[in-house]
Length: 190
Image (cartoon, rainbow, N blue to C red; front, side):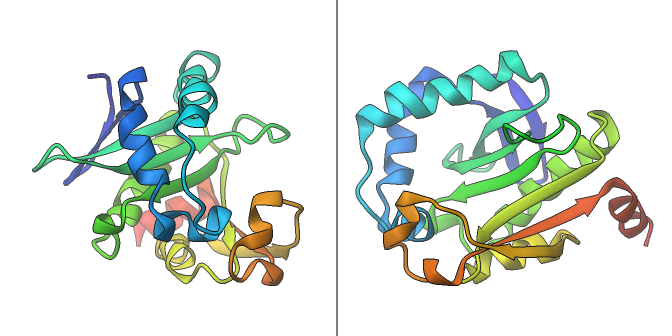
């Protein structure tokens, strides 16, 4: 197992081709996918042919960035994933932070814990200058994680995502949060 990062309760490791079933179970939960595609059933073929190859490709193209399987240390259970990677049109020192966790992991601080560790690694080891994160306006849980991390609301926007058309609340748009290295350093010293 290639461990990328450890926290008090989590191991973030590289994905492997053997993670298709774990991803399928995560993506097949309508509650997990509610704000992403309206809770439609997962397509295992899409996971195997598109998602996993994309995840695996990041490790070679962008060292230090990518998608990380979140494993609960005490049980070895797959809880979901975090991503920390530049979006296609953004500079490499301004990655996007994201997460997708099983319902059984909700409300336990895992999203904040894993995200905080990625921010720290990015700002102290990877030369990151700014990190963004986005979610739907109505996704209050995800927004709360961003706020706990010290991220601030940058903008509300409307973007064409066909899969969002059926997601409840998509008519309210999306929000982007961000934090700079300076803001993170100041908060860390407090």
